[in-house]
Length: 537
Image 1: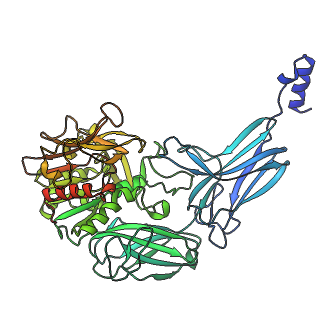
Image 2: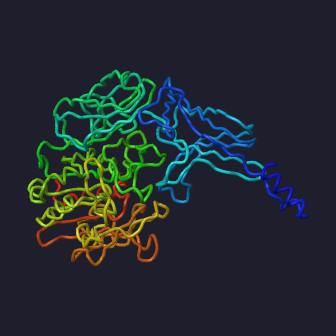
Image 3: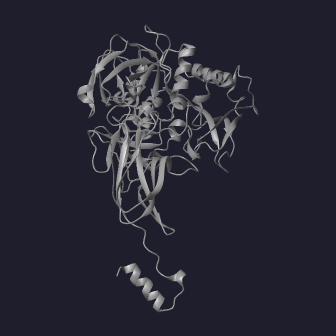
């Protein structure tokens, strides 16, 4: 006699009502697996399989399992997410549900050709007799309990964040396409070649190079892409495109051959790019970022970027500002975080530049990076911060990995001592408000030609906020504020200060300020600050 039958007999003998008798257990689901039905891609194993909906060999996933009894089974493919306020951590992108008999079964998932390349978790819900049991779908930082399906497009990664003019560019590409077309685009004005990439709005600076990829269809491989010509300092993208229309990008910076080719440097926050990169390199179904799990303390800065290779919030932090530089004809040197650290001392940076601009969210800074910029300011160098939450957390490099450590304020070096303001609140953009001008009398030069005066309002901002603290330099002037946007005492403050050594420092105080630079009032305001801080027109 089975245990369930025995328990029912005991209940009947004791005269218990039928409702209290033992409910038959939910049949067990065993051997939940997924495969592509083709040759495994490098890294595939019992809990990871790679498919390519646009390819020819790995176009779908075969889901296999067995049941110990008849049950209804719902299979779900789940897109994992983080930083989604008010939304679940997973979004179901496909589901199939029906009754199955005891025994082995196979179900095919045929994803859309347009499904975003990334990893997805498989979840199975077994139900019978009003009860249910769930298999798979583990939380971030925990051991994988079910299959993960990697949808492969074209992944492109670069060995470094910046390159000198003429320096060879080493790519690492993962794709199962038989051939690729590789091309470089400059996010700037017209160049020699006139093709424009719609996703990045970049202009081609090389003709397409066709690469036979048949020998590498089952594993990532390196490709040395020689850059022709003396390209000017700026932001570039490598684009790799397959015949089936899959495309991947990798951003990189062409730095000046020597510092100081121009008197203004623009630092793109490449450390922050990778901190917010949710590419799942280890194949566990969750992005490899400390924003996904506190158990993750480091990220690989040589990974390809999720979302086809374009960094998270890249358009807010960088592209609008770079477009503004091009539109207004400003001549600058572009640097990465690594280039600032590589300057060695702030003395060298000060000799090279009158103004250093941080357009986007320079949140993660190494000790060397902070020392260089602080020394630069001490020597009278001017700083322009067009985002919020800058110089917030100390990181260190360990080979290709960026390791997160403590907050700078907890290490006795509060960011407001350098920036003028520091992070006070965030709500991921749920509440946004307009700046109200407060400093038109104290700093009339900043608002000249904008039509703004004390009490005037402009823009709509938020996401993350900065404000002054006791560590802010003496004489830090409040230019504009969004009062109590995220609660009492949680205001956004736009500020400006000067040092006895002659340094001039402007801070926007909100994360998405640079994204609004197309607004004529904001453009004129930034132009005024640019002129004040020593940037040539």
